[in-house]
Length: 105
Image 1 (cartoon, rainbow, N blue to C red):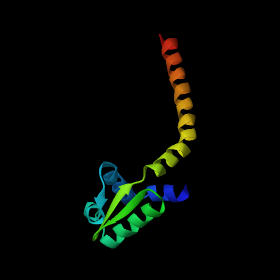
Image 2 (image 1 turned 180 degrees about the horizontal axis):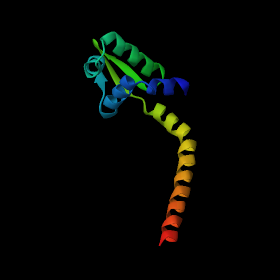
Image 3 (image 1 turned 90 degrees about the vertical axis):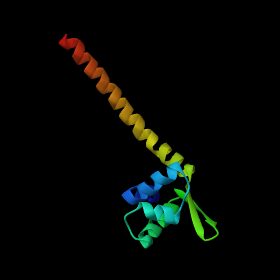
Image 4 (image 1 turned 120 degrees about the horizontal axis):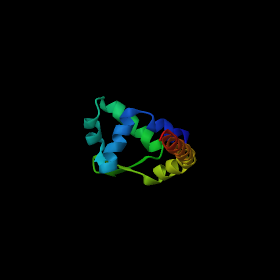
């Protein structure tokens, strides 16, 4: 989980993931979308691959990257407890706001 969260912490890697959310892309296409040199893009792609967020397939001279949905399922499962905690707090806040509105009338 640590590698996954560290991979998501970088804005350039999140940009790559946003592109891949919409469609597969070659390393060259991804490099064109980022304002950094190709060696930097390669390092970001390696981090994403090692974190299990993307898969890569060799297609002749091109490397095609795509998202690995399983990694996001793992992240969503980890976040579920936090989501429930915040939902309970928001529900309690909503109740208090509603009580305040009734008392103010």
